[in-house]
Length: 455
Ligand SMILES: Cc1cc2nc3c(=O)[nH]c(=O)nc-3n(C[C@H](O)[C@H](O)[C@H](O)COP(=O)(O)OP(=O)(O)OC[C@H]3O[C@@H](n4cnc5c(N)ncnc54)[C@H](O)[C@@H]3O)c2cc1C
Image (cartoon, rainbow, N blue to C red; front, side, top):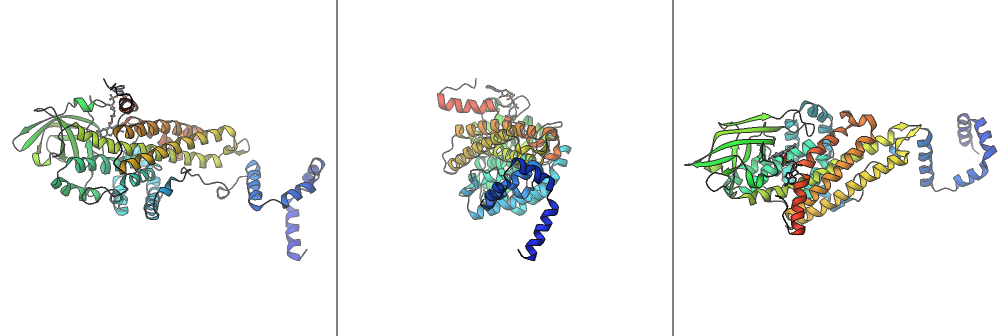
């Protein structure tokens, strides 16, 4: 033994409680223990030390598995370039949005300048749309992962983006003429103008297909719109809102680009929500609101076009359910690795592990379904019922996951500062918008049975 080794032995001897060693020697063969430990492979030895520490002292986070909601490596579906773009979005969400979001959520406000500046700099809209409104080759898949990156930190942010670059932009892309697309798409992609989507009404929600009460009437080169809209995301600050109305002449659905400040158009912010508080939803009143024929969406001639828009965006809401679950699961897991009760981290209790596994199973199943859905969408094979099934499933699994995550944090689960309470509340909106659980089930039910059970 050289001097250095002797020094180490002396240091060790100072730390060891010899009384305890003597006690141990009475019940355990210490020679056998030393032989077993010295023949152990280094990784097993390390794992054993971590396990021993977690029973007595605190394990450092670096020694524990990092929380990872992508258990089946779905990100391997993407190219290096796509992953790099998403990594930039993740940094923005973690470093800029996360520190600001609880205050915005509490204040019932969208941190819109922060989001607009960030998404503009990152160029996120151009990952999914080309300048002429056509889609990039793997737009649906990328849009899904983009939604995950947003929703795993904050679902309101994903909704703000989904209303602008989903519902509103799709309305222009599918419903607009070439001239309308040329006018609006580039400004929407650069986020110089922000759009909103006005379909739902105070008295007409699920039944919008058959019975919009908001009416439009042509008078010369103008249309006169009257009615009310409810729940319209982004409308408190949007530069325009697409308003869908029933034509008094032919009873068919028409769409209009109603610009901010148009006389007869007013918006009141809905207060007191318990979900998606960082999305500003408006109640819109249209009183003899006059819109030029040139701002009527030229290709919205019937309900079918609105259904096409909703089908495309419904897939996006299913993906929100994935991101929300990943955020809740990863936050809950990290918490359980550090939170100690009865002398050890709660992650070491069987009942807690069972909850974590259930959350991961929900998340992984939802993720798999959405990846497949997006492949179908990119291939032009996604029907209404495919989007609806994904929405029904992920929203229901999401409800289960966020409830488990909340309960895993005990009392801290209802505090905003621990970042799970928001997911818990926001899931209620995911469950009900873009077609409620029941309505989406009816869409699937009709497809598989051949019988419509809507009315
Ligand atoms: C946070 C948030 C944001 C939103 N953003 C927008 C937006 O930007 N633009 C927009 O246009 N809309 C928006 N919506 C509206 C949303 O799409 C509607 O809330 C949704 O379509 C349900 O309509 P409703 O709330 O009027 O419920 P209702 O249609 O009144 O439904 C109430 C209940 O009855 C059930 N039900 C209805 N019909 C049937 C049936 N045939 N069979 C069985 N059950 C049935 C429903 O499933 C539900 O449980 C938003 C909603 C929320 C909550």
